Amino acid sequence: MDPVNAPSRPPAGGALRLFVAATPVAGSLLFPLVVPLLMVRVGIGAGVLAAVVIGTLWFAAMLRTSEMPGHH
View 1 (cartoon, helix red, strand yellow):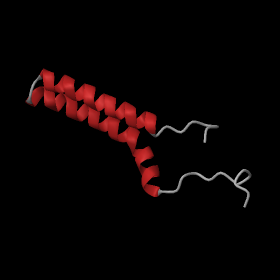
View 2 (cartoon, rainbow, N blue to C red):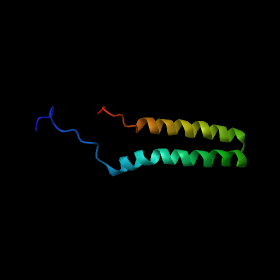
View 3 (cartoon, one colour):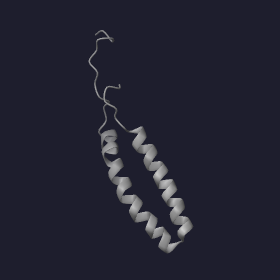
View 4 (cartoon, one colour):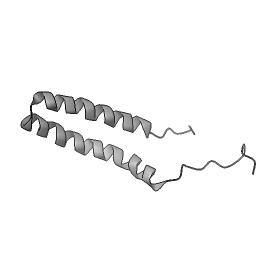
């Protein structure tokens, strides 16, 4: 088959599709549960640090797994 005219297929792997689907849900559930819990149990500093770390990791995961239309 000619590689130039080969039909494009989405990447295989059910695990990747599950990760892409679960990333927004995991972040939106983890963030409001962990941050206030740490603020109450440990202190405000720990809650702020957790918010920064979780927010950064969540943003990076969402950006890494984003699917842009028209881009292969």
